[in-house]
Amino acid sequence: MEPGGLGDMFGDPEELQRRLAEFAEQMHGQQRLAWADNAIKLAVDMTVAAVNRVNVQGNADAQADQIRAVIARIFPEAVALVREAREGLQ
Image (cartoon, rainbow, N blue to C red; front, side, top):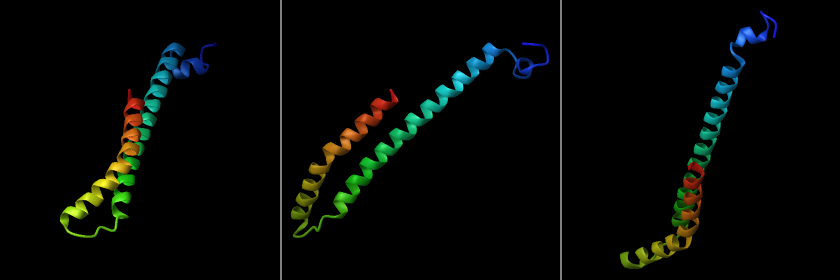
């Protein structure tokens, strides 16, 4: 490049390329983290929504059994979401 061109404005082209690659990697890491956060939030929201839909009745033991049954049904899906989120961060 000629002196006074864009190369001078941005410095060493190899340094610029290295910095752009670092920036791209940081952005990719932030996207993975955001996806993981969203997956974990979805798992929690699914569990809370399922429990809130239960029309618990009976004494405390019967109510606890009803809540446990709902959690047992939704838990595998929630765990799968969290597992995928954790794997995405590695």
